[in-house]
Image (cartoon, rainbow, N blue to C red):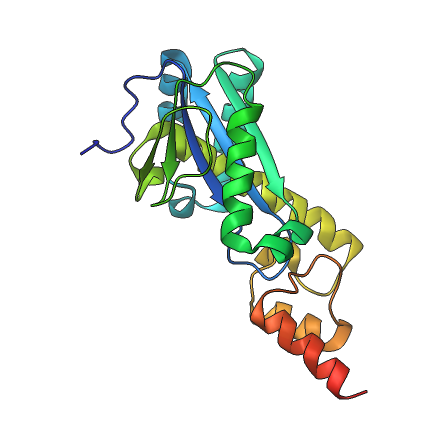
Length: 210
């Protein structure tokens, strides 16, 4: 059993996590991160933890530290999406696994082992281990969880400027009351996941009423 946010054996070990499996709109974002002892120390000092336990402001602050460590060459990070078309084509689980695979492959240094948050392993070119609750137990996975979450939230905020009225800058595409009201008044956009039941029902209802 690993201790909380364990950072041993950092050499070539990638932590991998995703953000955005549940929303009705927008891509899934996967991230993979390889740390060094120096970056691990800086991330701990910054309060890096499971992204779900942090406030938006804290996540943003931690992400800035992550990016600074990457720029300084003490951390390697890759972030890859699974777009809505892929989610609708192969389903959310397989799209998430594909995005994780791409994130690990996109790392600019050799990956000797990958630690994946959750209970499933994506296709990998290296040994891997699935760790339930890994984002609260392994520092590199927590780093990936923040990178995926902040990157996705920023993207959804940009999409909200193009498609106002759904509240994506606040709900990140999740099925909140505000998002439901936007769908009722504005309809479905190209960024909505048509394979998801709530969106599918809206589209079927619109077809039936014609």
